[in-house]
Amino acid sequence: MTVVYIDSVFVLNALADYLLVYAAAQLAGARLQRLRFLLAALLGGAYAVAVFLPGLGWLSTPLVKVAAGVLMALAAYGGEPRFLRLTLLLFLVSCGFAGCVLALGLAAGQGIPMENGVFYTNVDAKILLISAAAAYIVLTVVFRASARSSGAGGFLIPVTVAIYGRRTALTALCDTGNTLRDPATGRSVLVASAEKLQTLWPPELGPLLSPSALRAPSEIMERLASSGWAAARFRLLPYSAVGVESGLLLAVRLDWASVNGKKRERLLLALSPTPVGDGCDALWGELET
Image (tube, rainbow, N blue to C red):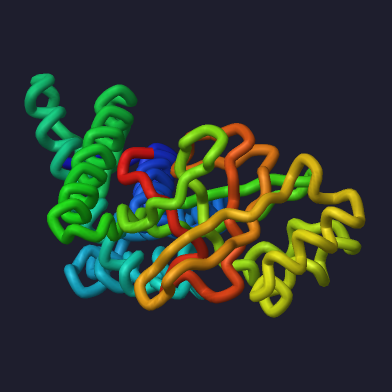
C-alpha cells in the first residue's frame, strides 16, 4: 500500500514545476515573469495532489497530463508571441528533468518515489537541484550547438537594459552577423528597436529618440549636443548591412545591462529606427554571453 503525504506532494511538485517553467523561459529567451511562473507551479502542484484523491485516478492518463501541461504553459506564457515554442520547450525540459532525476537517483542508489509520473514524497533535495541544473545545461548546450551548426547564431536570450534610473526587458537574438563594436572598448554593441525603448527616456528626450526621428541620426546628434544631453551618453556609430552601403546609428551608453544573466557595465546600445527581426527586440553579436 502506497502512503501519500499531500503536503509533500504539493510542495515537491510545485517546486519542480517552477524550475521547469523558469528553465524553458530562459532557454527560449522569453520574459521572466516570476509571478506567472509561481501561478503555473501552484497549478502543477494542485494537479499532482488531485491525481491521488479518491475517484480521480483518471487524471493520470496521458491525454489529461498533456492538457495539464498546456494549462501550466498558458498560466506561465500566455500572451507571449512564441507561445507554441515555449509550450513544446516546456515539455522537452520536463522530459529532460525527469530523466536526470531518475538517472541520478539510480546512481546514488536511491529509489525515486514516483507514481503515475508524480513525485509523492520527499526526494533528496540535492538530487532535485542537481537534476534541474543538469537538464538545463544539457538543453542549453544542445540549443547553442544547433545555433552554431545553422551558421546564424539563432538562439534567443533575455536582456535587461538600464539608464536614467529606468530599466526595460528585451528579447535578443544572438546573431554572429552583427559585428558592430564599441570603438572605445572593442566590445559588442547591443542593437535594439527604438520602439521598444521609449519607456527608458526622460520626457524631454522621448520625442528626440522616437523611431521616426532616428532615421536622421546626425540631426538628432546635433540637437542633443546643443541641449547638453550628448556629452557623456550619445555618439554616432558607422555600420553596414546587406543592401546598405553605409550608414549611421545613434548609440547611447547604458548604466548597465544584463545579457543572458551576465551583468555588463556601461554597455553601448545602438538605436535602430526599424524592427530588428521577427520575435526579438534586439541583436547581440556574441554566442557566448
